[in-house]
Every structure is written in C-alpha cells, then in structure tokens.
Image 1 (spheres, rainbow, N blue to C red):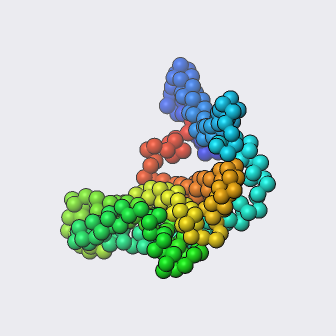
Image 2 (image 1 turned 90 degrees about the vertical axis):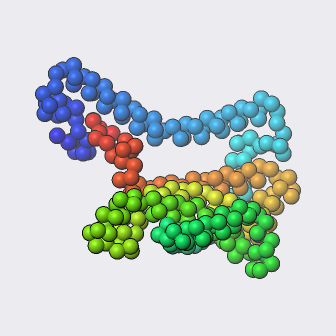
Image 3 (image 1 turned 90 degrees about the horizontal axis):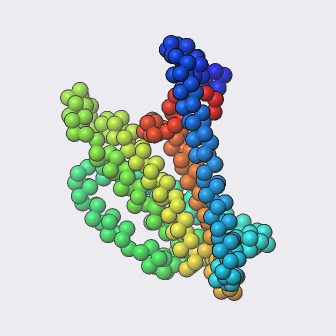
Length: 297
C-alpha cells in the first residue's frame, strides 16, 4: 500500500505479490538505487556549474592570465557586487524587452504555425519565405530598425521577436501536420470537421513540439535583445557591456554575460515547469517521477 507520501513500499509490494525474501531484498536494492539516482539528478547541475568555476579559477591562477584577457570568477563576482545597481537596472530593461518580444513571438508563432500546419497550400507557399527570412542575420536588420523606429526599446523588442519567432512556427506546424492520415480519415468518417480535428487532435499533439520550441526561443530571444542593445540602445545589458568594454572593464563585461545567462536559465526553468504541468503525459515514459516509486523520495 502507498505510504503518507504516496510512494509504494517494497515490503507492501512483496506481501501483495507473495515474493520471497531474496526477491524482496533485490526490490529494496532497486528502490535505493532509484532514490540515489534521483538525488544525483537533482544535484548534478549544481556540481557541474561549481566544478566549471573551480576549473576556471584554477586555470586563470595557474597560467597567470591577465584580468583584461580573462577575469577569474572571483573578479567577476567582485564586479557584480560593485556594480550591482547598474546591473540590476539594465538587466530589468533587457528582461522586459525580451519578454515582450517573446510574448509577441508566442502569439504570432502559434497562430501562423497552426495555419501552416493545417493547410498544405500555406505550408508550401509560406515555408520558403520563412526560411529565407530566418536566414538573414538579425544583426543586419537592427540598423534598419533604428532608421524606422529610432534608438531605444522598440528595436530590441522587434529583434527578440524576429529571432524567436521561427522555431515556434516550425515546431507547431510540424506537430499539427504530422497527425496520421489514418486518424484523420477515421475522424472524418465519424463526422468530425477539419477544425474539430485541428482543435481536438492537432493542437494537443503539437503541444510537446510547442514547448520544445519555447525552450529554444526564450534563450535566443535574449540574444536578439542583447544584439539590438549593443547596436542601438541607451539602456540594457548589451549597452552596459559596450560601455564597460570601451573602458576595458572586462570583469564587468563578463558580469553582464553572467546576468544574461542567469536570466536565460530562469526563463528556461519556468518553461520546463509549465511544460511538465501541461504536457507531462508526452514524456511519462522518460520521467522517473511519473513511474511507480518504491520507497520514500
């Protein structure tokens, strides 16, 4: 029977199945191994990050690398403490422009992806245009945006939108377009309309693709904002990094990179959390948390 935490105890399983003591021992060993694996998975990202910084610090000290070439993590941390107010102010600007552009990318990418995935004519008609547009380097578009909208927030928002738009369209369209023809035929035979098939089958099928594209798009959206801020902005992490590099404050430049990385990881974790709560069924075979747990967590 499950315990208070909802986990199934090996002894209860053994008694219910009439297992021998040897089988019960093997079952308990498997449960202990599963618990150790879950703990390792939880701690592994932190161990890797800490190990990277330790190796980085040791390499800088061992090879006497100048600070203006590659600052040590301790120098970057000191710069973050020293310039925390400008970093906080500019990171908030970058986060807002990125989220606004990313929000527009979600809305338009989802709608266009549904349209392209639902229509063969639109798929063949618009796909070459989308591929050609996505092939254009976004840094080359920023000067045009400056001419149209001036220096400020708008070019950064549009650049974040442009760079994160394409993955969403492609993944949503793929998820809808790959609904099995046999399933479509069966649903049509049962009286379902084309819109019913898209709404009740195509969209749920596309959701894992959609969230996979979100995890890609949110990270590249920061790239778009930073690119625009380094070219045409008076505020933001990209603007701060350009100012810092102009006076050879390399630790502050790396501090800006660290802040951007932290924001990207935070947004990625948020996307994964939403994905697990909405489309966990799609990966239940690969998720240890969805399997039967033997023993406490």
